[in-house]
Length: 159
Image 1 (cartoon, one colour):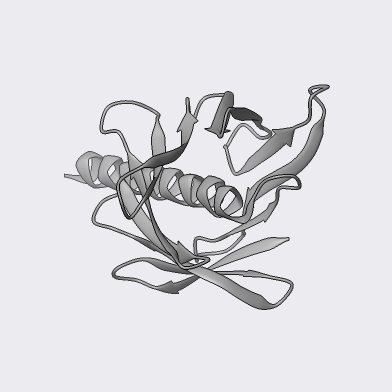
Image 2: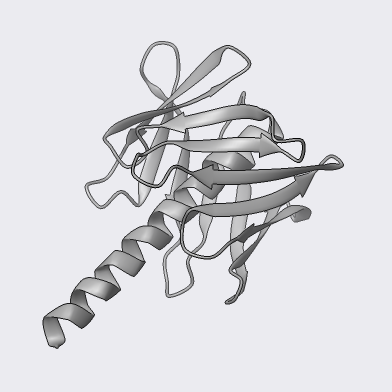
């Protein structure tokens, strides 16, 4: 199980560990559209397209190694190396996502942790470490975007 715990406010950092062992640190950039992490000696960038629900995982050389499409919709996917991993929103709030097997049944999950601090747990069997971190980071960015939108809406309503 992958655990992402908030480790800093600005920039937002999430310590990611598995079975108590640190795996990497995901640092989100300005806004909710970008972040980075280092894994296995490679620096990766997670980048969201401004007006779509597509995220890319890029190497330090700028090569796209994975994409996440339709993030935030009921069904979304991660594509890498010619393989597609399907996800489904498991709750109306979007706080829980399911990784689907070939038969369409849940085989894994990503869930937002409870409490004030934004974090996540992920159980994504069959996905390479960088894809597990990528899928979790995509959801962290998505939840961050939702929180910021809600806060902006509340501020506008109170003015």
